[in-house]
Length: 188
Image 1 (cartoon, rainbow, N blue to C red):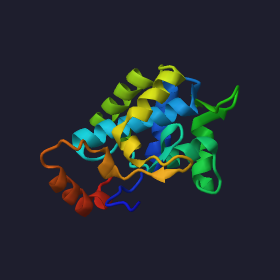
Image 2 (cartoon, rainbow, N blue to C red):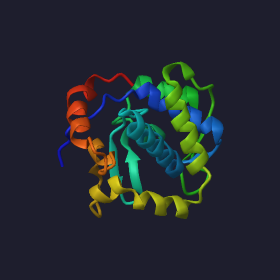
Image 3 (cartoon, helix red, strand yellow):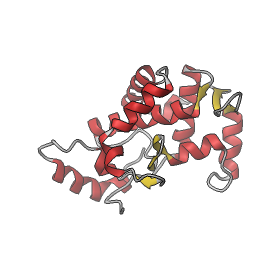
Image 4 (tube, one colour):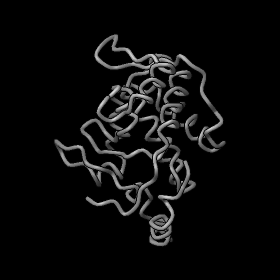
């Protein structure tokens, strides 16, 4: 599947969003982190036509996954450069106390790189999804239209941002055309 448009991911903003989330919910597991970030990006994108983070989402068996955020939490040296790994180590404590990686903040969140609406969507997503049981959240993300349109069993399939826009918008085609022209230039 080819992307019609995408955004330039802000890697530092992804790390700071995880710091923010971990400061609000110390010890939050990787599944919840990834879903909270997805819903914050989805809400912001649907309201303001730009995501908070601009991460590349993939439809995987446990739902939508922001690829870079997942690489950050896994400390994937193949995908995250050494400079960012050092920042991650300074700002986050990532441990596996049980079956899942969990995250704690070691540093204060840098609010300066987030807009007011970014933080509002992060807060809304945290309040709604961070404390939900695994089973309930798993069920909800599997009902998400953009996920259902994209997921192919046994794969990690990229989720085009245009699938995240509600299909019933009267001006959907013009919004997508505008985003094709401007999304790469959007500073997140």
